[in-house]
Length: 434
Ligand code: NAD
Image (cartoon, rainbow, N blue to C red):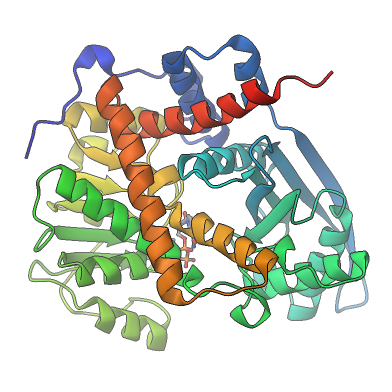
């Protein structure tokens, strides 16, 4: 394998003073924007535009609970940038939702859509609530009241939500129905991630894992490493991790370790991913799976493998463990698994990182296909969806790799440069409305 360590003078070091809290998502996103903007020599006016969100809406959501009492929740929707098209981004229901975090995630969506060159801007939303403590009826009432609270921003041409943490296709069905009732006719394209029966796309469930597989294979081929027999460790065995692992195994890799919130399993001879998926279907988690040696999530990250796929949580690769990572390639299935300071250490070690905004963009890409199919009223076969997804992921990987080699920067900085220059170009063409 080629020596991928960057010349030390080209590693752009984050301003340490700004990283008192290396895990703050807003700081992490801004530091990456700043570094790419600097390398692109972005004009100050456009830089200022990209640093701010276009619209921030906070609504109170009074809901009649099952016990007859009224509870008031807070809902947020942030549109970061819509210069390239309607805002796109998920809605999460979680007690930890904050405006700062939603703003960071909305900007993240702007870059993710731009890096795969789909005609969307970025948004994110959230409701501060604990869905695990709520009945289905309460969840439905929260969803409908939140939808009506933010209705002035929603619409197929303006703002198109999707599921995120603790929301799913059922929540999207309620959102779509509420919007449709307000406007007086059925509008499928107001949201993506819907059930297939009401306009969801075939292949959406597998899309993020498929993108992880496609970009990993691209990276291995670029690095002249054999795909067949490449060893892979996957943290997180949910939608992204389990399907990513399954498709990597089908591509010829040997998945040697998998984990979920209950811990992990390591087998140097390979884990049968289909069997592990069947186990989780039956038992809900990997707890007790037993086909290999038990490892903790921390140990899994440090295994001597060719590819590491963090596909669970943010901030799992930090200054505390980055020096111990032995993988040659990291494919970021999760959003934000690597902190900005840890990234500097990975660069020094010559680890090839496929950044989240590229690696896990398969999901939003097929969401775009869903929106296109809804608007056209014509539905594609799963094969067509998968083929078009492959084209977009391969082209995006190549666009980012080209800039990375041209500017001798890592893949994350290159991905931000690709994304930011696409958004900036549109701002330049559109000019400033006065
Ligand atoms: P999921 O809920 O389906 O699965 C999450 C998995 O992570 C589960 O196996 C869970 O047990 C595991 N997990 C939870 N806590 C853990 C811990 N402390 N240590 C190890 N594992 C733990 O979620 P998902 O949809 O697969 O999403 C995973 C990540 O990918 C998130 O960061 C998400 O934002 C990101 N992502 C998802 C999509 C998508 O289409 N689903 C798209 C882009 C990004």
